[in-house]
Image (cartoon, rainbow, N blue to C red; front, side, top):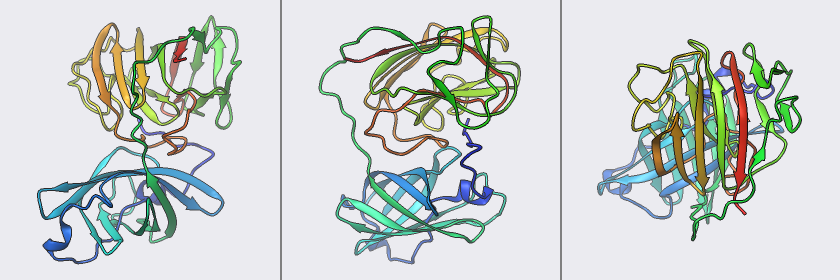
Length: 318
């Protein structure tokens, strides 16, 4: 599920409001597809000296409209029903998702070359600056050559990991445990393309997730007996739905075997391939940053309830 860093908390209304755009009235003729603005954009939102990631995708719908989807600092991808773009000026709006207020989120910006910049008005009425650049395609021209597997967790202590805030994680009997909601945990090393093996145990009603490169969350949740959804076990949160629900009972050890090359991901849950070489469109809410073209750490959620991990092994591409 979406993650809220304890050391990055903004007012709740802003956390979920970032980047919605207040729309100018334009005629249908103004809404045809335009390659200058269509595509995916990695966004950085400014709050004083702090920076937070977001993401938007803009596509044409038929001949008369631009539509899209948006991911804020937290939460999942949500649809944008209409995007207005004319003479280099962009605007759109969308209803709140997790915001406390019942106000639409609004965003306006200007396209200059390959960059966008503008202002976002949050549900609480506060205005924030933002900038955006085109998201990289991350296309690999050949299959990865895999290197040597590396244990990210040694089973003894938290060497190689750091908590994003006050640490509640402990190591007991070869298991990395978060006994209660608290800080998220990230690796000190960063990775590009890799294969990742993780074993996890999720109590009844609890929730966690594994962020790949610190940006794309593969969901962990007590999901046995539920239909596959984009926010349940096996999903790339908010984007990719698993082909089947391969969950075990809550409290049992389960396994993920994940391959990530560029944007292409394959997810094997408990020995069943539930996502097969699909493209991840963009970042998950709670991502560390929106710099999709860069390597990033493995990060695991500890802020959504108790969770346990063991046998965390990564095989980087050479």
